[in-house]
Image 1: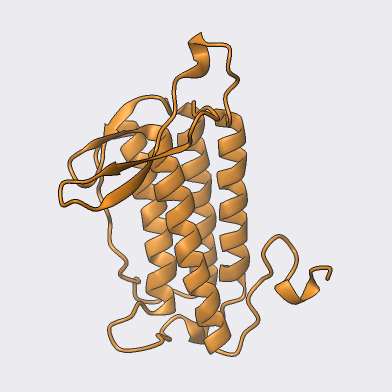
Image 2: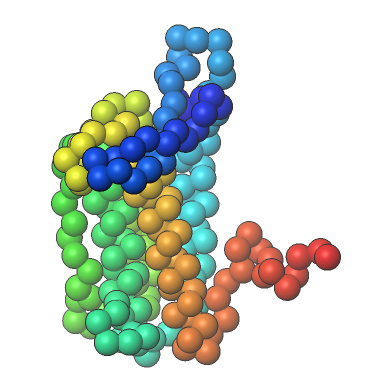
Length: 191
C-alpha cells in the first residue's frame, strides 16, 4: 500500500532528464496506515468507469464513424480502445502479460453494442481487481517492473480518464453536450 511519506520522488533517467515516479512502502508491517486500501481503489475505478459510461451513453449510431481529423481514432475506435485497454490492464494483473486486442470496430456495431461493451469490460475489470494481489510486482510494457497497484492507477485510471476527456471533446465537436464531471460543469461551480 502507498503511504503518505512522499508519494512521488524525482530521479534521473538514463538520458539525464528528471522523471517522477510513484513510490510507497508496504504499511502492513508498520504503524503508518495505508493511504488507499484495495476496496477504496476498486470503488474509485468503479466511479471512473461510470463517468466513462455517461459519455458513451450520449453517442448516437451516426457518431461512431466520426473522427476529428485524418489519422485520428473514430469515435467507435476510441470507445473500443478504452474497453480493450481495460481488459489488457486487468489481464496483466492476473497473468503478468500485456496483450492489446486492438481498437477495430466490428462491422454492424451500433451504440447499444458500444454501451454493452463498456459495461461488460467494466464488470470484468472490477471482478479482476477484487481477486488481484495489488502488491505483486509485474512487468511493465517497457521491460521494467512495477507494483500492480501502479498498473491500476496508470493503466486503468489515468489512461481511461485521458481517453474519456478525448471522447468528451469529440462530443463537443459533434455538437453534443458532454456529461459534467461529478455532476457539475465548471460554469455551475459556486463563485
